[in-house]
Image 1 (cartoon, rainbow, N blue to C red):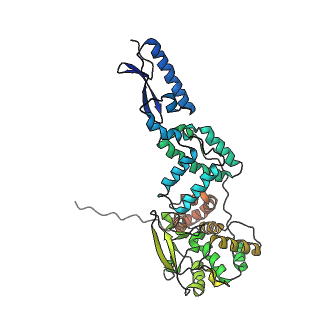
Image 2: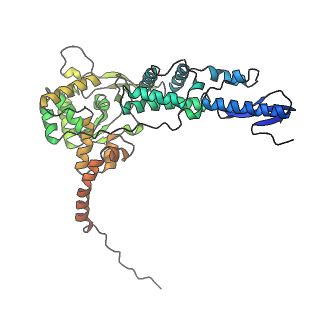
Image 3: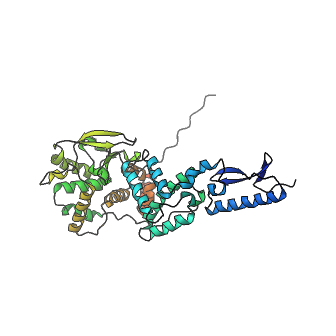
Length: 411
C-alpha cells in the first residue's frame, strides 16, 4: 500500500484522521475501509478540519457528532466571553485584594461594551482583540488602553492554558507606545510658597512631611504615631489607605519599609505632635496579603481632620480631602498646577540633586530596586554625574590606599 497522507492512519482496519486542536492531538475514526478513494476523502476532510481550526470556526460537535471525545469539548464550545470573564474573576478572588478585584471587574465590564458578551470564546480571533483595542483607544489614552489590554491578556492567557481558545488570539499584540510625562517637581521657591499658602498649621506639616519623605499619599493618611520613632528619626511604613477608603498593607512588600527622616521632616512631626498625639485612638481593620485575613489595629493618626473640623468627622483623611487641600493651596500660592503625586517626585529629584545614592532613594520610596529611579528620574541622575565626578576627583588622591610593606620571608 502506498504511504498514507499526513494526518491519515489506519486503526482496527478502519481509516482514522488526527489533528491538533487546542494543543491536543485529536483522533477521530471515519469508520470506512482504507480504499484509495476513502483515503483521498479522509485526507480532504482532515485538511478542511485544520482549515476550520485556523479560522477559529471549528465546532467539534458539528464535525464529529458521534465522537467519544466531544464531551470534553462541550463546555469549551458553549463558553461565552461573558462567562469566561465571570469564571476568571471568581478564580482571581483568592489571589488579589478587593480593590484590585474591583479594578479588574470594572475593566472587563467596560470591555463588554465593545466585545459581544455572547460571542463564543472558541470563536475569538486576534482581529476581535485588535478591534477592541482600537475601540478603547477612541475614548482612552494609550496608557489606559495598555492597562485594559493587560487585564484582557491575563484572561485570555487563562483561556489558552485551559484550551478554551487558540494561542493565536493574543499572539503578537504588544503594548501601544506612549509618551511618558516627565516629573514636574516643585522648586524650592514653589515649595515654600505652597507652605505659606496653607490655611492652618496641620496642612503645612502634612505637605512638608510629604515632600521630605516621599511617602505615597495613602501611606501618609494611614500614618500613625505608633509608626514613628522621633528619637531615632525613623518612620515604619506599615499600612496604606486605598481610594475606596480601605486600610491595607503597602502597595508591595518593598513598600513595608523604614524611612530615615531628614531634619525638616522631624521638625514637621515635632510641630504636629501637640495637634493629634493626645487624640482618642481609632480601631481600624487592615487587610493582609493573605486572602481573607485581616488585623485590627488601634492607632493615633498623625494627621486628622478633627483638628480643624467644626462637626463630627472621621479621625483620618480620605484621598479626596487631600486632593482638595492640594488644589486650593496651589491656587492660593499662584504656582503652576501639577498633581498631588508630584510631592513624591519632588522628594526624589531633590534627593538626587543633593547627591543621594539612587539605591538609597529607592529604598526610602519603597521601590524594590533603583531601576525605577533611573527610569523615572534619568535626567536628574545625568545632571548629578558631574557632581559625582567632582567629588571623586577631589577624594580619589586623598583616599588612595597605601601599598602594603613587603615582608621578608623566612628561608
